[in-house]
Length: 193
Image (cartoon, rainbow, N blue to C red; front, side, top):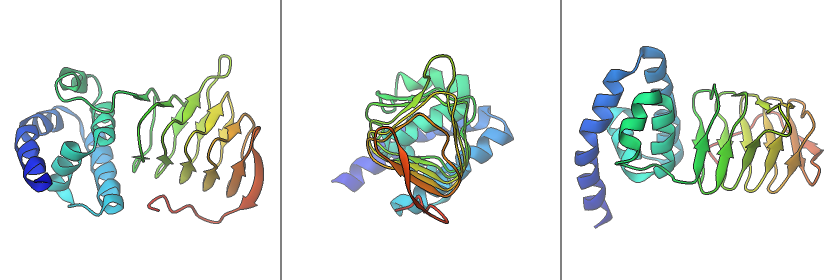
């Protein structure tokens, strides 16, 4: 029954995805292709345009990311085919390969986020006063974590569940606690796990 539902949704979504995809420029199209490829690898789904349609039909979080990537044109359809209602993407720049485990009650409002980052549910990334964070490549931010203020999170960093990060985090660190402290080192973060 689920396969029939996904197939039916995919047929309905195809014109919207196709139209929005044609309206955007090459840079945005490349970001969407990179996101879809990373999501397909993570969810073990189909690749290419078929994968894009599948992800759009099945995952509300991917829909929200797709609308964010498309830009203002995405607002035309986001009210008809909704993304995750409690996922707020308010960054000027989010790098390619961005993953959202569960978008429920998640606010992502950084100056920039690097490539291949993964965010879990109920994460808050945002202001502490008048500044917001900058996040490097290959960062995993686990459930309930808070990353606040004008700080820099290095590349290849894991932020543990419910951590409150208010100070800079160096590359290759594992942090947790309130306030977050470095508890270990890691060479590379595999965001597909």
